[in-house]
Structure formats: structure tokens, C-alpha cells
Image (cartoon, rainbow, N blue to C red):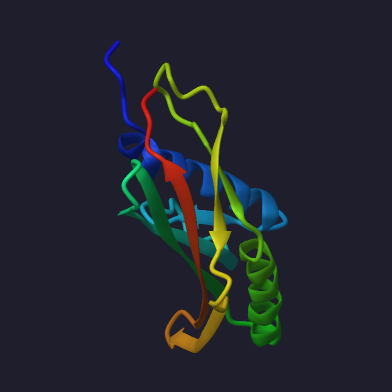
Amino acid sequence: MSSIEYLRELARWTQLSVRKQFVERTENIPVFFEETIKQNNQETLYVELRIDGPFCNPIGTRNEYEALIEVNVLINCAFDEQSTMKLYNLGGVVISALSKDFCVYKLGLNSWDDKSYFETYQLFADDNIEMSNFGQIDPVNKIYQSTVEAHYKMRFKNGTI
């Protein structure tokens, strides 16, 4: 087998690792991923997770890299008398889930994806976890939305599998 660089695998490892940990941290709230097609609109309270990146930059001269990701969560809530409270409650759950670092594991279907630990994305120390409320975005279906966003970075030495 020819050697495979970590950089080539990092996007998949990042997506699968962050998704798994986020779902585990969100207390059984329905989570959809950005590219997922929802089969029905039966869910009245759910979140959609999007991960941008990794954005990789070489640092130094010893095959070291810094990887950055942005995690965005869209919170959706159907209207009822407690919609605003539900949005804020769910926003708190999401903020709590994003306040922790994300470990990256070698996940996937390739023979070298052995589920072992790779490295950790750490929340930017000088950045905020930001929640933005949009209120009612669809007057016909009465859907309320908020977003929560956080940024992470990780340093690693590029190697081969």
C-alpha cells in the first residue's frame, strides 16, 4: 500500500468526529447534517449542523500544519406559545455542546481508518460562541430560527499512514 498523508484524510476525519460528538452532546435533540435531505417535516424542533473546513495552513518548516474549522448550527422551531423559550433553551444546549473541544479520530471505511485518536480541535481562546436570533422567518409555516457559531483550531504534524 502506498503511503497516505494525513492532510488527504483530515476532512473526512473532521466531519465524522465532530458530527458524532455533537450528536452525543445535544441531549437527544434531532440533528440533521447540512447535506441531509429531510424525509418529512414532522420535526417541530431540530437543529442542522454545518462544518466549514478544515482550512489548513503550513506553520514553520517541519511539515507542521494548523487546521481551522467553523461550526454552524441552525436551530429550527415551529411556532407555539413557547417558541421563544424553546429557541433559547435549545440555544443553551447548543452553546454548551460547542463550548468543549472536539477530538478527531481516524474514522471512515478505509483500511487505515482504525478509529484511533489523531488530534484535538480547540475552541479559539479569543473568540466568542455567538448566538443570533432571527425570529419568525416563515410567516406561512410559522418557523422560528436562530444560529450558533464557534471556531476551532488544531495543530498537527503531517505524516503518512
